Structure formats: C-alpha cells, structure tokens
Amino acid sequence: MYVYTRRALYFYIKNIKSDLKMRPIIRIANGTFFRHHPASQTLHPNPPLFPSLSFSLPSSSSPPQHWSIIGPSLSGKTTLLQILRGRLLCTPPTARSFPLLSSPAVPERLRSPASAIQYVGFDADPRGNLGQNVTRSAYLSARYESRREDTDFSLRAFLLGNTELSPVAAVHADSAVPPPLFARVVSDLRLDALLDLPVSFLSNGQGRRARIARAVLARPQLLLLDEPFMGLDPPTVAALSPLLQSLAAAAQPRLLLTGRPQDPVPAWITHVMLLDSGCRVVAQGDKDHVLKANLGRDSPSVSVPAMPRTVAAAAPKKAPTQPALVEMRGCKVSYAGKTALGNWPAGLHWTVYAGDRWAIFGPNGSGKTTLVSLLCSDHPQTYSLPIRLFGRARLPEPGSPTPPLTFWDVQARIGHSSPEVHMHMPRRLTLRQVLASAWAATVGVPAVLDGAQRARVDAALRAFEGELNPEAGRGRGREPGGEVSSTDWADRYIFGEVSFSAQRVALLLRAVIKKPEIVVLDEAFSGMDDAVREKCMRLLRNADSQLDADVGVGELNGLEKHQALICISHVPEEVPDSVREWMCLPEASSGKEARFGTLDRALAGDEHKWCEIWGL
Image 1 (cartoon, rainbow, N blue to C red):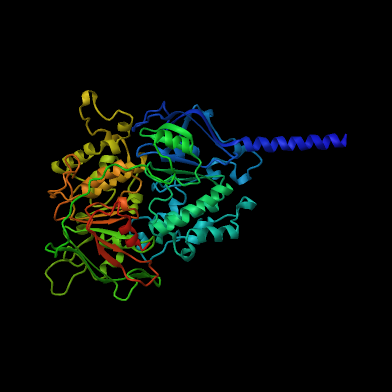
Image 2 (cartoon, rainbow, N blue to C red; image 1 turned 60 degrees about the vertical axis):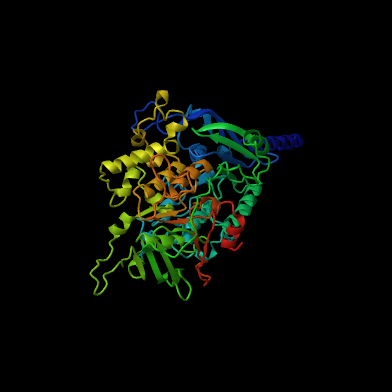
C-alpha cells in the first residue's frame, strides 16, 4: 500500500508539472477590443481593434518561443501590447485570460497581470509607462533647475522601486532585488556612474535604459518592450541586444518586442506577428516562414528595402553671407560639480547662420538635449552663458539700446520637436489643437489663429491625413467619389489616443508649420516607418532648390533660405538630406573636444561617413 501511494503521488506531481508547463501566459481566443465600452456614447471614435484576434504565448515550449510584433505606422503595435497586459475592453470578456498566473508555480506577488506583465515603451504616455511619473518633470525646464523636490528620487532608488514618500514594508518576502542581479543589469546597461543622480537629470537615452533596467529588476513573468532600440546610440544598442538575448534564453523574464518593417529582427527571435495599418493581424508564426512569405525577407539581419529616397541637392558650403542666428562663445554647462556640456578647456564655440543645415551627434548623456535647451531658453543657464540668439543677448547689455530677448521672443522664433516636448504635450488636446499650439504663448494655452494660420493648419492636416487619421488606415478617411474629406476628423481624435508615430508626425508639423527661423528636431523621426519618415523629410528639403523636384507635401513647402535646421539623431536614415554640417559631442566626462565636419552628400546610405563621425 505504501509503494502504491508513493507511485500515485509521483505521477500526480508529474501531471501537475506537465499541466503547468502547458499553461500559456496569455491566451486570446477570438477576442475583439475597444478603448471604451462599445455600447457607450463617447465624444471620440471607438472602432473595434484587432477583431477576432487569437493568440497564445506559451509559458514553456521546446524549442523556446521568442516573439516580435512587426508593423508600420498606425498598425497598433503599442495598442496590442496594452491588450496583452490586460488593458482595453475585451469582447467577449472570457476571450482573454492569463492561465499561468493562477497557478501555484507563480510567486504570489506575480499573480495579477499588472505585476506579472511589465511594459516599457517610449510613447511618453504617463498612464502606461513604467516609472513615467518619476522620470517626468513637472514642466520642461524643471530638470535643469538647481532646486530639488522631495520627489526627485535618485536613479538607484528608482531602480530598486523606492520612490514613495511614505514607504511601507514589503508585502512579499521575495520582492527585494538580488544584489548580483542589480549589479549585472546596471553594468550591462551602463548605468553605474549615474546611480546617485536624480532620475530627472537623465538624458533621453539614459532614461530609456533606466526604464528597461527597472523592468528587468522587477523580475516579471513577461516583459513587453516597445521598440527598445529606438533613440539609443550605436554603442548602447550593441550592448543592449546581447543582454536581451541572455534574458530571453533564460526566460528571466520572457520577452516580447515590437519593431518596424525596416528594422532588423534580432537573430534570437523565433516567432513574429505581422500587422498592417488599421489594427489588423496579417500573419503570425515561425519567423523565417512568416517573413519570407509576407515580406520577402530571407535573413533576420537584413532589413526590408526602404522606399526610394531622392537625394536633396545642396550647394557646397560657402563663406557665410546670412546673419548669425546662434552664437556660442565658450559655453560650459555645469551643476553639482559635474559638467554636462563643454567639458574641455575652451568650452563650446559654435555659430549657426540663417540657411544652415546642421546635424548634432553624440552618445547618450553627451549634452545634446542640454544644447537644445540652451537654444530654446528652457535651461536657466542660458541667461548667464556667452550665448547670443538672433544677434541679441539674453540679459541687458550696458550701453546697448537693443532690449534683451525674452523667453516668449525665443519661443516665437524657434520650432521645436523632441521627446521632452512629446512628454509634456497635454494628452487631452485634439490633433488640430496640437498643430495650432505652434502659435500659442505656451503649451496648454489656447492659440488664437488668424485666417491664414487656420488655413495652414488645414493644409497640414490634409497633406498628412494618412499618417494622422486612424480612420484613413481603415479606408474611411475620404469621402465617396474620391473627394478629399474635410479635416473634421482632427477635432475628434485626441493626441493621447493616436499611435506613437502619429504623435511624432503631429509634433513635427507643429515645429515647422509656422516657418520659424530655427527648426530644432531632437529625435523627431523616431518611431516612424520608412514611408512616413520619407514623406516628412520632404518638408525639410530646400524650397528654392532647382535640382530637387521632390520638395514639400501638398500646400506645405520645404525650408526657405532664412531658416536654419538643427537635427539630432542616432540613425543615419533620420538625418535630412539637406544637412551639410555636423557636430559630434564627446562623452561628458571624457574631457575631449567636440568634433566638427561637413558633408558633400546625404548621410543616409553612406556607412563609411557614418562610422567616421561616430569613430567606429
């Protein structure tokens, strides 16, 4: 009897373990999703998303499955990740379940989707982004001010989850981060030297690495990474990919990534799901089979061919005949004993003339965003440093009859798109209000437009309806008979509910729509697919070029002679073809000087020049 009992117990435990291995983390069986209840009356459109979707992510398989979701702009990649983590309404409600999370194999602290499935995205959505309430400052200039609030937690505290003003004891004994794991993740993501800095001090790329690190340290069952390589410099990308591969191989945690059609698919990805515009699944399954059958791609390391790109023509650099718009004479930005920009003996010397087309490069944390904050007067030290904008100083000059520039003067003459602007753009604004805010005194204050300005907003909305209007992706963007629809749709869709790509397009249009004297684009094209990016690039070509017919979109022209362009990017394809001068900033702590150079042709496709600029 004793032998029989032991044998029965053995097979019982074996069957339980087998059953647990078969339980998927996520199971969706013929489900359709909505942002609002389909029976409710809403002010904004509420179309069905991913109708009749079926998908299952196994908790264990042989061989292991590592998934990537691939789709163009307006395909709903971010929306699908939110669905996978339990967000949005599911019809019928039983179509979506999380079988593994109810099993005893999962620690008690991970029994709910909110804790077991972590999402790290860079869509600047404070509601869905891990730690966004900590990494986001109250307003654009706050991160540069000397005063520190009680909520300005250090990076170390952020990574360990100690970001409560009145912390309570841990509910679960296993919630503490193991020191070896902390040391490895911090080292692999190059965050060692930043641990004691306030999180709000971090650059865009550093903040992204920090959010990935915090998600990994939370040890979830599943980590959803929305375009994890976006906005990272080449050295960081080279270090991050092997780290993600090691995490995926150990299933600690399991990973699911998203990407654009032109992005290389990591070699360790085994399965993909392809989306098309309009939140529809085209195919899903084995990577090699799906990519070859649907995209004609044989190798995971070869990206989809980009749209043909017409190279913009530009004359060779001549002696400046235009007025200087930006003059920096030995600028150094320092605080708390550390120099963030100009950490070399002479400091930064840089002049931008009307008509110049500049690209700014440098690793994450080299001071690129700090430089932009000086130009846009968001940094308090712009008043004390040797900087002249539009030929005028920021403070009164003895004996000069010319009054100093005010903050409002600068804002009116500069168009600016950046991750910081994206983060602080009110989500409640409609798409029309976002574009109109280019003429507003500040973000959030309603703009009063004249007839010409309203016409320009309408022209931009018509020209980019396919990139902004979600209804266009579902075939409802035009009136019957082929007539162009009105722009009323821009009053129905709010900024916070359109795709990340559409948000970036709206912010780019906001930066150029009023024809400012200086256009500053900091990672403005991140998150756009090839087709959308190429269309936006046409707005940044030289409007008076006789050799380039592919300039402007619709009624919107390219850049004019009196305008200067300053672009920041980590990807050569995101550098406008009209750029002919570049500056590469060094690591802030290296003590090396900034390097300058010129281009005689477009940087996209010139791998040798790209490697030369980055010193690769």
